[in-house]
Length: 540
Image (cartoon, rainbow, N blue to C red):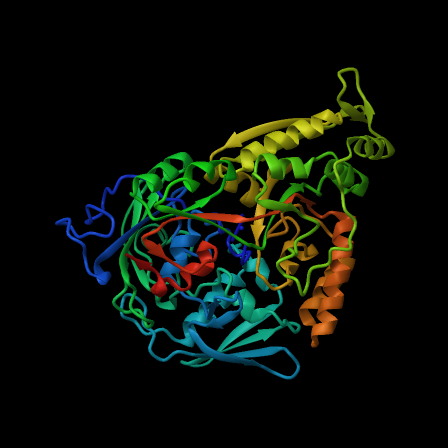
């Protein structure tokens, strides 16, 4: 989730499971993809690429209601100080270089001198300071992703071309996090405004520094982007990108097969078979740092009992779900750090193979006994879980299987299937649920403090509201360590504790499956980091 936003990879991908294409070309001045209005093949600078997103976007990259439906668009309209390199390491974007003080408290970023906002105003360090001091660090606003920056004290604009990040404590992975959905906003547009109510920016014509600008947006239909004439980087080879707003993945795939769209991230591996046989389509599984989970609302005493959390994990046949739902495109997860992060991954932790009898024994130990109708009870109250699920990718079928597995051990589950935007508002923003199934797309750095920190319980990215001072310390030790060995040691211990405590019920690390037209050349990586190299994309 950004933002869930639910993806990774860069775990990055987040929400890498984001794009899919489809729809008619309403609003496009190009009649056929890659051709001009007259039907003749255009020059490289005249190409149009059709993609799609699953719901109406919000163009403000810090909006608390903007997630995977918005991120592929904002990634092209805005820049951060750093961006993802092809090796998933941070590289310069709005910043040219950076350095950190000996005590690890102050990071200095030197900025590019040739950057303009799309309305022609100059970009300066004042924009950086405003974005963080007035929006990200303003607790009353609740900006999406703000919980990543709890250790940031302030940003100082030293001069127009230099910004300093002053931390509360050392943070070794700051440049990595600045590449993760962390975009800079224009101070001259937002100053004195409510950032979430500025409709002219958030839902109409945003002002960015990125390679594209929003040229047209029709709610429920499409978002049209044009190459920005003020962009500081290399000229894009694709002059127009149209994101069609289509929630149905089957329609997206049909449009890809018909040649009306160039790229689809396949959220449901069961749909891959129909694409593999098409000679005009490339299907590519890419590694990711996405981890799927079930979050239990740990503000409820019943879920604070680790025996209950372990029982519910033992009750889920995760390998069967991987085989059946993911068609094998995944691996059973033991925690948030995936095996693709070889340097940091610790596989020697407690594991939870499918064992419904063990689940029943743990629930009995926790005081639950079968009632007259077979549903477990404790203190006269039946064990009932309300579980909302969003209509995206494998979320609904996976939630339905979890419902079956839990009901097999005596736990009644009420599923509530809803559209994606409603799911975000109720679960991610409103925190109204007993359990929910989703995913995180996280940085490739092992620093995932924001997703577990006690200070983020009930807000930010700590969806289950888990609280553990012991885990806080281990994750902070890893974040502030000055040597590689010390970081490895801290994260190894953190993974062991996470496996014992189960802040989340971990499900799997998926492979991100991308289907592209053979006419499209792009980096072999998930959509979000690949978009950081959009000027290298070629549409033949």
